[in-house]
Image (cartoon, rainbow, N blue to C red; front, side):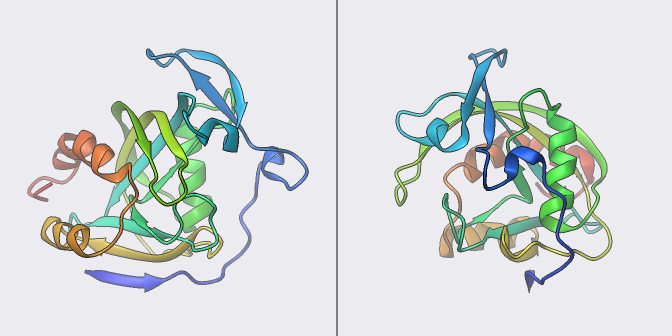
Length: 200
């Protein structure tokens, strides 16, 4: 397992609704993933939760190791826990693929290669520490990452590249996001297809 702390880099550009004066809005969906409205981000995550569109990205290196991130301690939701390469929410009307590529660049300072769709998964999880709820219609993406990372320290405390055995060991020893096991199980077939022999 290779780990590295987040380092300070150039400030990534942010969309206007990410500013301090305007709340971040999410796209509400029905059980089929059809848009039915919008809601402010925090309100959508308060119990009982409102089903909204999200994305999760899993990137592998050329050795088939998965890039994980430990969420920054300053985040209001699930701070300090490990999770997949990148996850988040499209802006209303933003295609999930575009949102996923955008956030990989903003959070990690990297551009994914060969990123492709890997299906969707719905879940409803409660975070035991914050009491916030993840009720999401999640678009999954897999791809490759090459070159150096420049993590945004406001988003990421640490990164790690792990193989399947290292990930299993980490999950038994360190805290992970409540959604991570669900999205990992859903994305495994796409990871195996992406890098043959990776063991995922």
